[in-house]
Length: 95
Image (cartoon, rainbow, N blue to C red):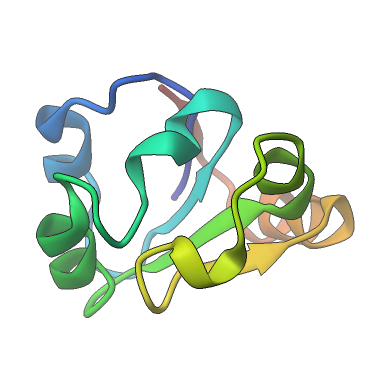
């Protein structure tokens, strides 16, 4: 399943619904909550052990966030990779 998370702040209940092997893309203002120094950093680090986490490059650029400020392991992607993820995952959930 592909989870598209744009909700800000990100509720922990949403992260708890992500299953092993799911792909997660953080969009828009949700990226403000995936910083290495943020409150969700531990939860996201644990989630990375079983799922792949992504963020759109354009969203971090617009907000002046460097990739090095994100939780280690979150992959920065472009729109082409986002399209690939939507094709790969038959089920898509937007939060």
